[in-house]
Image 1: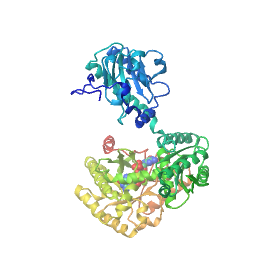
Image 2 (image 1 turned 30 degrees about the vertical axis):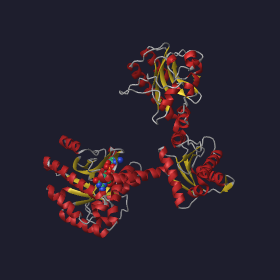
Image 3 (image 1 turned 45 degrees about the vertical axis):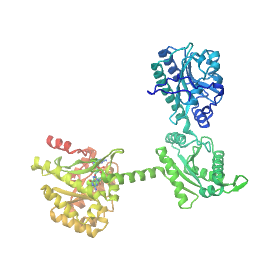
Image 4 (image 1 turned 60 degrees about the horizontal axis):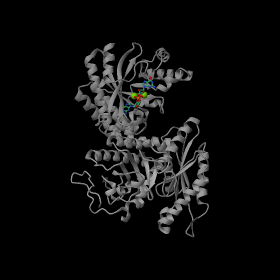
Length: 618
Ligand code: C2E
Ligand code: MG
Ligand code: MG
């Protein structure tokens, strides 16, 4: 080693003893293949220079008071200047010198800083032509070391007369060298991962970018964005039979066949192993995409692939994902891959998957697993919507509506997460919490305004009604809190009554015996079997908002609502109209004798605090 660092880690490199003349030294590291490949990967050896390097050189020139500073990338036969200040012509224009003129190659070879106070008397470099042609008298160079350990060159300062490099000089150079190395790394990272080294096809990151653009274009034009995933059947066996080199040959050929079969704007990439993705820019709709899938399969499989004189037959399977809705590019790609795997599993040649549907299914799965701990994580709260007596305009009670603030997905509407909670069974514990919270909040209002005799309505999922101890859960909650059962209404839907009618009947009877009331929610949207109203202990019918909504435009809806109202009053039941949004609807319903109503016009769902404020106002 010709250069050494002293005990403080500060490089002196001035121990000249033992230095070999450059001619006799074998500069092994300069020619290291891996290092040279890393150097090529930066793409800095061609093209326009990045001014940022020269700016670093200017800082060195000014702070150190030297005439020349270089960012020298040491190639196998030259040093190339990614940045330079103060170099004489013609070198400045060429941006390079032969290695015969390079001190920096020694930095690369040793991987250490090189500090030379007087070049003429230094055996390592005294024969270097830079002394004669570039006027180098003193040199200090710091390695440009990449994160992978490769030293690609040197950041150096050059003086025209011998000079003693101070520790400050070397510290500044060291800092500038690491900044320059970061910059080189950036160039490399920006360029490196865009192509698959085996097939030369775009890699997944570049492909995803192309898909993103295609999805955006499709959104604008109303045409579809389509991605196909093609897998080679039995590739593992092919690999075993032909060896990895043979397997690679097959992959390269498939890549070439796909590329040759594409139309303008289409793109293909390889994703791991034997799977290829094709962006089908030319497909206008799903039929087109399926046609392209067939064509590509044909192109890939029509002839066997010649692997060193041996004909290897090829079979392929394709997954197709096509969408006109705005999906994430990754969802489109995933859907195609899922299609491919489904096709393989089912031994079909081709299978399509709707990415929007898959994305929804993914979200449902996510919600199903996340809802379990949502309460413990404090992500749940209740909103309350007033239920109004239409004749007085005063609230008779509130309905508790569950809200979930998901940390990543934002506020999830109950229609999305209640079904998920039902599937996971989490709805049972959730429901118990809702019941307790809603009753506690109601009690605050009842104590503050006892004369109003306010009630609370709590939605109950079918699964909850089916639990064996539901009656006990409800009655012990009321007991604990000291709340009158008559202040509680449980809202159930026809779905609840449809399943397991016998058990639910018993549960409802048990609760009814306690004095709890029942409302049949969303009436009109299910089977609306009128027999429910007499068979089960129902007190209130909530007319679904779709009817209230339709009343303004469809006279038949108005007659239907009239019919429901007549029927409920005939049976001695109360009616609540849901989703009243306009004065017109309110007037029509009041005119028909509807007693109670709920809707944005009368009061939106609001926090317990907001409801308290509203109650205090009127
Ligand atoms: P629901 O019980 O029929 O509740 C009424 C829904 O209509 C609420 O939606 C409410 O915000 C909405 N709404 C009220 N007035 C209007 C209006 O004027 N216009 C429109 N467009 N909508 C109005 P939300 O809060 O999204 O709840 C949806 C459903 O989720 C509820 O329908 C209920 O079935 C279920 N749900 C809510 N909380 C719970 C709960 O704690 N447990 C169970 N099992 N289900 C719940
Ligand atoms: Mg309800
Ligand atoms: Mg409803």
